[in-house]
Length: 426
Ligand SMILES: Cc1ncc(COP(=O)(O)O)c(C=O)c1O
Image (cartoon, rainbow, N blue to C red; front, side, top):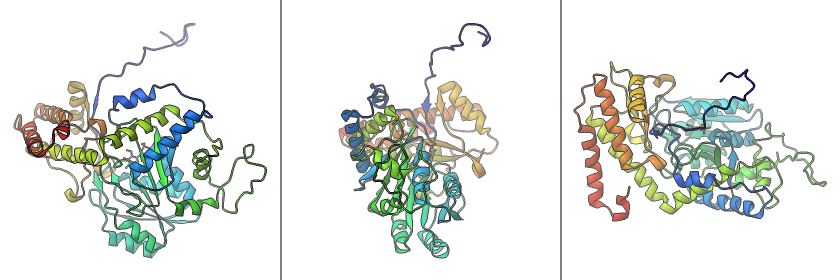
């Protein structure tokens, strides 16, 4: 129907094709999360809504493994949480160090620069991670107020060990911010034990939810530092409110001190909370914790082992430092002479399966296969391997038919032989 006719242009009702999302995220949502999101929104001064907010804070503390009281949501995708913490901690002119080992280190650099930071970077080639001594040396050289670091960088499929980085930052008086978007719920993440001062994550990877809200947690060191920037909007500020001396945070929407007022007992209004996303975050956290975080970590590792066994049985080469491979995303070098995009298209068109490509120096060189959250289960690993094998055979790659699934099944057989009946459901 033409847009110029008198009838409104309505389109068809939404009917997305069924897809198995085996890329680096987003992934298929757990149906329990979708169900929670369909619950009726409540008013923002409803005591039941406030109770859900408080419950979400309790659940997030357990997910982040922290005692941090300030563990809450920032509406917007994961980068909204990253940006909120960075813009609230960094005042213009502050020094920031970003160790970059993939695309998302560049994102942290870009955000730090936009915050007006004097930003220094160190880099390793994509596929590698830093030795803590390299970060230590860079901190001594640049004397940053903040070190901003990615945990698992989905662009390279490698994960930076963090246990030694927090203590190094503390020793030099720097704050440590970590982007755990791609790892939270899929592998151990110890906010307090690793001395991480502030962390942000999202739901759309290992937590089985949709994109659209960020999870953040910050400790008292950060709270104290940003208290000097605690401004409150005119119109809602109490009559006796005295603005502090620190510079105003350059974003209203992402102002962590104002968000803390909304998430505190005072419930000082800020934005209109994205109710379905609050419900989603609460349900994602509930599910991860009810299953047990260690169970979830084990399931991600098992899927990674089975997937990599299958890929290697097809003589495909994995990308990146194997000792630091993320358990939830696997990088695969596209074989010489194979059109990587044609294979991805075949997988989507023939099987409804999405796998990822990559960016920057890895564009056109690797595929990225995710096994995370709700999708991290044996049937999906097997279906994905079978589909990839078929697509490769169609494009002339000399794989031995059936070898990939057989190798992956071998990994599961060993696991089954050692496991309890409950674990076998994975
Ligand atoms: C490591 C990492 N950080 C940050 C982001 C950004 O998340 P979002 O797109 O939800 O803002 C992603 C998304 O893929 C990611 O993998």
